[in-house]
Picture (cartoon, rainbow, N blue to C red):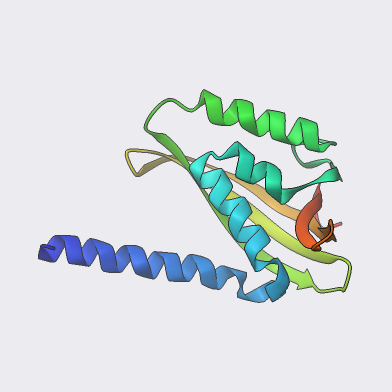
Length: 151
């Protein structure tokens, strides 16, 4: 690897570590959920995004009140991005409360849209309330609700 390549790789690794450190203020049991949600968004992977959202999803984020509406909206949004245009989601955790059968987090979603890795546009959600609950036989944590504001 050339020196510039090594520098770029080191910077990339540092950014990845910083992104993962963002989740330190979340209860550990929901780290994978928020990481998968972010990664699904960044890779425009509607199947992975679908796996992070509860079948019983409710909320008002983007006026999306059901899982079907949530997934269809993001599916259409991902399809609308031309080749080479990629979203990058950052999740800032303001506060989180841990519970046995529910975790509540106040977060801000920031989406940067980039062309060939160069940010061109960004959108910030403002503070939203995310509620995660365990589901199914194995108690896998899923996003049950996203509401605009701090609950």
